[in-house]
Image (tube, rainbow, N blue to C red; front, side, top):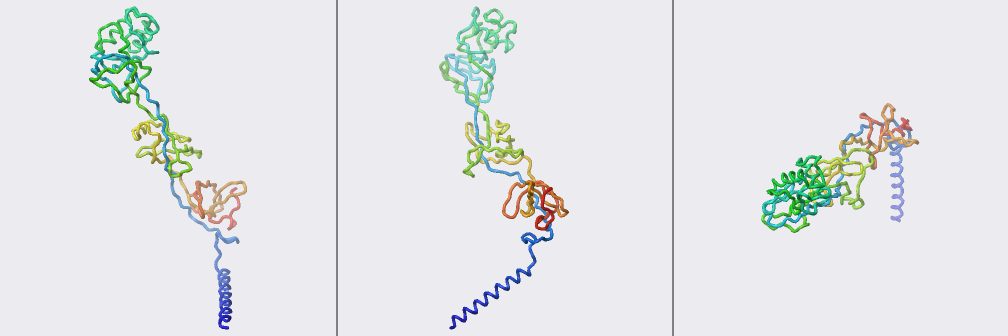
Amino acid sequence: MRSATLAVLGSLLTALTFAAVLIAIDQAPSSPVSDDRAVEPVAVTPVVAESRLAEAVSLGLEWTDESSLLWPGAAGTVTGVQVGPGDRVVNGTVVASVDRIGVVALTTDSPLYRDLGPGSRGPDVADLAGALADLGLLKPADIDDRYGPAITSAVRELNRPRGASSPRLPVSHVIWLPATFEVGRSELTLGGPAPPPGEGVLYSERHIASARVVGSGVDPATAGRPLSFTDGLDREVVLGESVFAIDADGYLRAPAGMESAVEVGAESVDQAVVRLTVPLRRVRVPASAILTDASGAVCVVTPQGRTVSVEVLEGSAGSAFVSGAPEGPIVANPVRSGLATSCS
């Protein structure tokens, strides 16, 4: 009997409580944002911030191949090494000395293959004459495929700084130089024996041929994959204290500038950041303030009823970042307040 009485009292208490809640809800002031009925416009001031949309990335690197200059065959002891890392070898550069006779680099169409001297004839003589003319030792009018007096005189001038007095040019003392060469490392040892013919003795510096922004390991879905940017905004890459401009496909415009910051031959560089060159002005507004009409136009509305087109950059529950919003207040509830129903 006691249990039944308690059950009845409990039911009455629940009913009374529910009724009180209904009365309270009915008498409570309605929310201007969530109520379905027309309400007064609620003005809010957007929160303005600047962002560079910074993102941690890696850089994928491609390097130029290493090339070399080959030893022509001069035998003896290396008594001088005239070039080293960082030096440039050009037509006429003496790169080393063997038994005190210089080995000279000459730029010809093809490598010299025989000793040349007075009376020699052939295309290789004309090649040699062209190199001598480039050095200013022979007049262009005297370029010939015959090793005559003019070429003989020019070769004497070429030989003098090499420490040789002969009018002949031995092929063992001529390194073929297809083009200007920047030395990265040298295999010549002062005081050591001269290398055998055809062995590489000077090796070029390797340079970064291209550097491209790729996804970092932070996001496994994009890790190592090239990133491109299609929003038309200029971006740059920050690596340490250096900043590099990039194009829309994520390639650095001047990748050679980062060579001092990376190990030669490295395939990638981590801990880089890609960001906007000019900070983007972002405005955070309530999600309810954004009006999208039937035409697809997106806008916000001022308290005076003026619509302002905006672009939604990023959104989350309750708010969104937009660009193009006005400086002053906007209406948080343009549709529910009846202030505007379209962006036109």
